[in-house]
Length: 78
Image 1 (cartoon, one colour):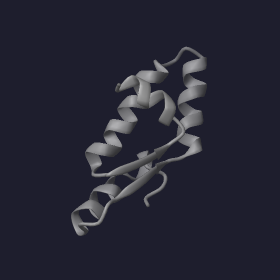
Image 2: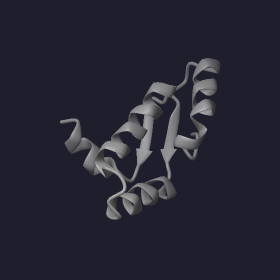
Image 3: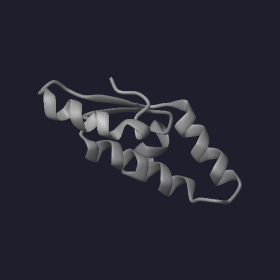
């Protein structure tokens, strides 16, 4: 388990390269809160930023992502 996910994408990538076991990453509450706060201020498109962060974690090599956006993300990709 790598946490926080977004700020440690390099670690996710290195772990993925070093092992064949499933790699998990935790998109922590601070990453969630940062997106929600900026979206509330109208500075960003919160849904788009959240989805891009989750895709970045996946691209880095995570097999499993724990996130506070789970319910929303399930709807976005359905």
